[in-house]
Image (tube, rainbow, N blue to C red):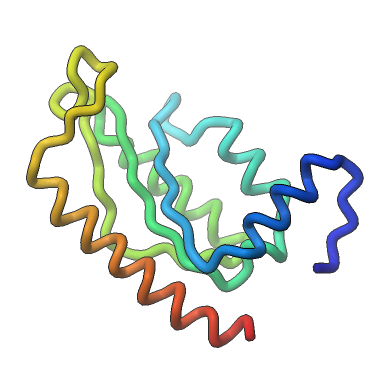
Length: 130
């Protein structure tokens, strides 16, 4: 890798992201965007993300759709390809008392479709990186 990170924590983060071919981001919607911690984690690296695949699962009072759209845009900069299928969960119907995760059964098929897409894209993009 061409990155010369000064912080010891950055080496472990860089190594882990470098090792993986694909990702699933689970993001809440916070003020119509993603959390600052997630943004920082993505921005801290660059080449380690290049030509990899990602799925996005969002949640919030409005299903986290705006946060997911923002995340898609953010991921274009480090060249992460996001798949089209996106499970979107409601704080009102997929969480008991807005705290305990209790997804509706119909989400299972959407999650499986997204995971299959991430696997397919990650496999295809691996050929570009090798």
